Image 1 (cartoon, rainbow, N blue to C red):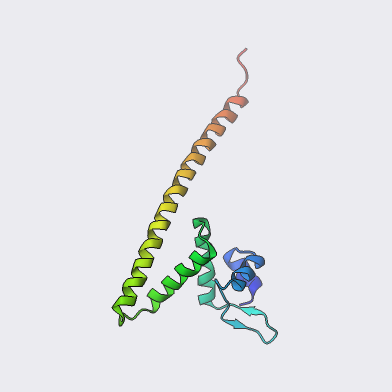
Image 2: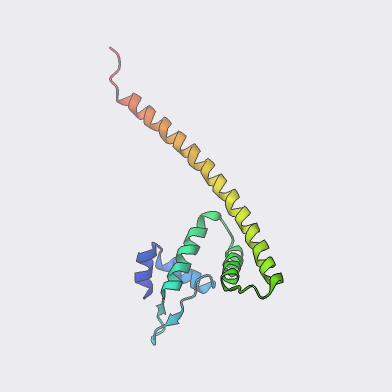
Length: 132
């Protein structure tokens, strides 16, 4: 699938997808004879995953490390217990960071919901005719 179709499908700009390719986060699995990026389903899944990581405010290096950890665990056959333990430990650190960020985002959402309610209430009060 070409980059334009992928961008529309996953809801990302062409610029973002190209940038992620350039920095090595999501490299398309193929190129056409003319050098155009071609994305397979696994590439698209990876784009969606990286898109999901955006609100976590991870650096590019942290995203690369998390993706490498996920890849390592998915490919792990259990024949190297030390490596498996290392990957599991890294995953635990990332899970804690994600959980912490999720809590911070929940708090922000609650604050914004309260603000929205207050603004709706204020708008409703403004629409009522003045007593007279």
